[in-house]
Structures are given as structure tokens and as C-alpha cells.
Image 1: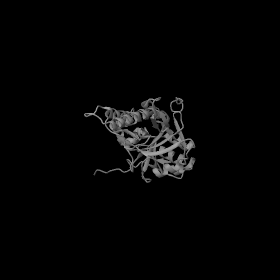
Image 2: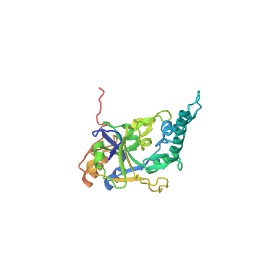
Image 3: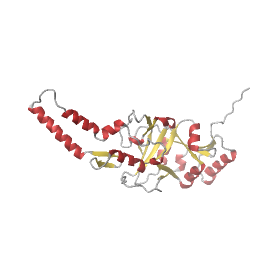
Image 4: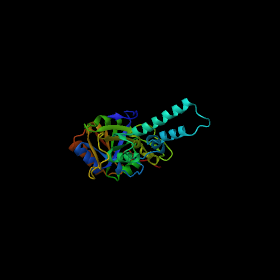
Length: 284
């Protein structure tokens, strides 16, 4: 398991889901990672102007343009020679320039920069976790989807240790940075940077992202329509610290979750009701 930036192993991670997804996790012992092109955020995997300017060759071209600008005073023979050398070096560097991606190097002369990075969202799969030491009502409503939902409590250390890595996949865990894509810039330099940053409108998600991809994938090809993500085998007793049941769930649903988790699937984890609404306040 790779980490792009340091993460505190004790950071609590929460994953909210409906009951059917929870049962699928228990029954399959596999964690689903969705391809990022399926997400509703239109800026998912989006580039910033600064990133594009540097990576697509525009910065080098501007530097060469400035260098080629006529001098205010005549150049000496030595200066002319040096300028000519720089011109040839730039021309050669443009011929040799490649686009560096998580899937290898691509000749810049044969590939469109923006198209290559757009293809990343088709071939990189992620599982989103909410980093918080208390529950979030917003996360319950958005990702739980109703009263019959659960929240899995884990941690950075537990999630990392629970993954059984397949041979053909790179597995990475990273926190997400929230930025203004129009005026901001990426907080780190990495081939996966576009997928480690989200629109600032999603700041409340406070996301830690588990990422899986095959670095040898032929990303210019089309992914099959029914191939919507990756299933990673996990050790559930390592992954899950606690299961919490939705705040307004009826008692029968709580007992059902407890029975399925502990009795049917034999997990040695706590099953509790949500801490939200657990305590009643008396007014007089």
C-alpha cells in the first residue's frame, strides 16, 4: 500500500452505505472501488490552468518565445552562438517531449494532453472514506440514503492492513485536497494529482481516498461498459472496528444488522446504534 502524503494511522475513517451494499461487502469479503468517471462531480479528475500550462509544454514554449525575442542591443558572436544552441536544444526537447502519467510515458507529438488525463477517470477506481472522529448527519443522508443504512468505522492503519493486494494493481491511499480549479493549484506534484483534488464545494466530505489501477493498462482503449470498477479482497475483521446503524433506524433493523454481522458472518466487531439522537435532552 502506497501513501502519497503522510497520513496519521490513527485517523478514524467512516464509510456510509445502504444495507444492500453492506451485505454485499460481508458476503463477498470484497470492497468495491468505482471508476471515477461514474461520479457526479464534473470536475472529478479535472486539471488546473497551472498544471496544464506546465505539463503540456506551454511553459517551455513561452520561455523559448521570450528567449527568441529581439534583443534591445546587438548580440555578440558568442551570444548569438549560445542563442542558436538554445533554439536547437528546445527543438530537440520538443521532439523528445513525453507526457508523464500514472500509466507511463506517452510521446507528446502523438497524443493530446487533455485527452490522456481525461482517460484516467475511466481506468482509475476509488473508494471514498470520510475522515472524522464523530458522525456526520450529512454523510448519513447523502451516502446512507435512508433509515436502513449503516456506517463502517475503520482507520487509516486498519484499511491499509485489510487490503489483499492483487498482483496487477497499484494500491494507493491519500487524503483529498479541496481547491478552486479555476484559480487554484494542486497541492502536490504527482501523476495522480488530478484525482487527489476535488472542487471546494465538496469540502464537507473530508475525504480519504483508496485508489486502485493497473499501471500497464492500455488507457487509450475503451473500458467495457459492464466493467464499472474493482473489487478488492479484504480481511473484514481487520478492516472493521465497529458498525453503526442509522440514527432513526427501527430496533428490528438494528437487531438484523447485529445478527447478520456477528452471528451469520461471524465478525468479531461491535455493532452499535448511531450516537446521533442517542441522548435525549429534557426541557423542564
